[in-house]
Structures are given as C-alpha cells and as structure tokens.
Image (cartoon, rainbow, N blue to C red; front, top):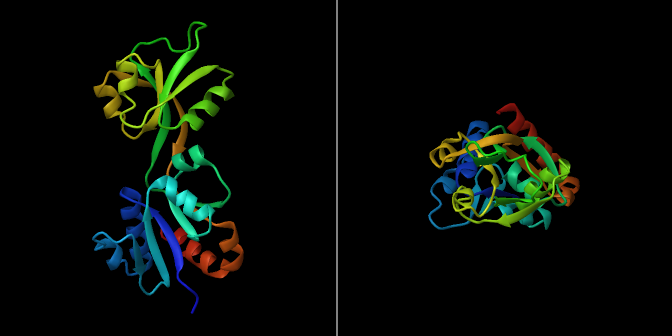
Length: 209
C-alpha cells in the first residue's frame, strides 16, 4: 500500500468544514475530531493523513511536497502565490476582500498618496496598481480596523464576512476586491505521481459540495 496521501488543513473553521465534507464522503475522521494536541492524524479507511497547520504553512508544505494536498483560503493563495495546482473551490469559508474607510471619507479624491493598512500587503498593492494608484502600505498583524481610527491609514484592505465589525467601528466598504472561499491545492509532483488517488478524491469532493 502506498504511504498515506497527506492533506494539510488550515486550523480552525476550514479544518472543521473539511472534516465535515470528508465525513459526508464516508471517511472516518474521528482521530481529527478528537485530536488533543496532535498535529498529524490518520483519516482511517481513506489511506490519508491530515496535517493541521496555519494557512501560510499549508501553502509552504504543499509547495515543498511534504504534503500532497492542502485546503486553504483564496485570501492566502492571493497573498502568497506559489507553485502548485489550485483545483477545486470547496464552497465554504466564503467572504470577500474589500477596501474600507471611515464612513463618509472621500477616499478617491485629492492627489496625496493614500496610506493603506492590511494584513495582506501583496493583495492591497496589486489592487491599487490595477487602478494606477500610488499608495503606501502599512502591514498590520492584528485588528486592521484600528488603523483608520488611530489615523495611521486612510483605508484598509481586509476580509469582510458580514461587515458588522466595520460598522461597529465607524467604517464602511467602498469597494469589493475579490470573492474568497476555501480551495483545494495540490503539489505539482504529487499530481503526476499519485494522479489516480488525487483525481478519485477530487471527484468524491466535487460530488459532495
């Protein structure tokens, strides 16, 4: 029997949603549900094992071939880019990349260089480049909504699900940038060497989403 197909899952909500999907297909994910502190767990009767990781690391593991497959948000894919195949939109983890400012701000007026705060500097940069706008980007790790309130930035580029956090902090979306959802990515070499197994799994996934 081949060594197990290794699947890197983004910890948290995407991990739970993926486990739900695998269970719907008929895989036994008990070990993943009862993981304790373990980070590599068998998905029994599927000859697979799940590796639980942060989103950025899922991409790194798949790109370097230590995991064959990964489940990661389109936001991380857009920010990190890299060499792998993006094969399926899993349809969960849906939200949007958006540009938001303080309510009532005239963001697109004037000639001064705007400051943008974001956890996703590459996404922000390419969005404004596509508009031909020169901006200064400040990378923030925590609550990006603070940046306009503290007058560190004129606007933010962030993920918006319901928009409640923005509203509560006096911010509003002025433009949606791109839709986001969970995606299935595959290592380029694994796709050649384990094509049948991977294609079987993908067709099972696509039949259940």
